[in-house]
Length: 258
Image 1 (cartoon, helix red, strand yellow):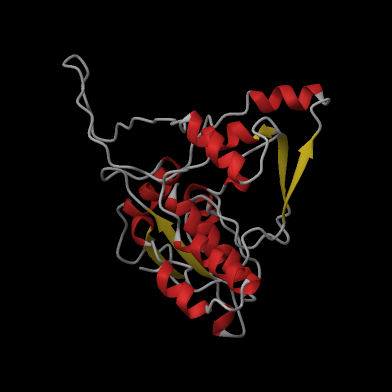
Image 2 (cartoon, helix red, strand yellow; image 1 turned 90 degrees about the vertical axis):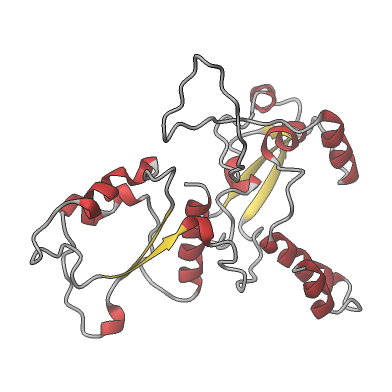
């Protein structure tokens, strides 16, 4: 969930790019090993052909995320010493909260496989749906905020407060105009999974489903005040260096990692 899901998807896409076959990314509770109760060892001619599993997750106040509860039970279950359900499996565990630099060496175009189609205002069903398209299920970054609760409200470990923020209308208007967008224009994003190799699962192209207006996209989906990610800056460096070769790429890279 959150960062862990993003990094898992990124590792999966990078693995495909590097030539690995039969790559799959899925929630821990959907892992076939849990359903079978153990890893079924596969006979292979070459050790390099053995499967490898990357387990990327985080904890919430010491508790597993919602999509890893069964996995937590599986690895926490008491067993005899001779019972080794994962014997023969190559695996690596990663803490999803500490992978901020993962994938920084992969410089792929995140817009590959992403296309945008603008919809005519005359298309009433699409236009009507676009006006009501807001981010009802946010998947952005986590912020640490301390909240003072009323006396009658009790807090239990694991409780979470979900907030769906909105960007300030004036800022939304300025950014739309700066990029030459009409705020009320309706668009729809299409992602071709066969050619999209480095699209973040938290990017606007991935989370905006169906027709949406430019205004709603900037108001409810875009994190306009957050610091740009290293991946985003890397894409900017690549684009600027191609458009303006007189600006040395090394110099641009130095100013973006400070």
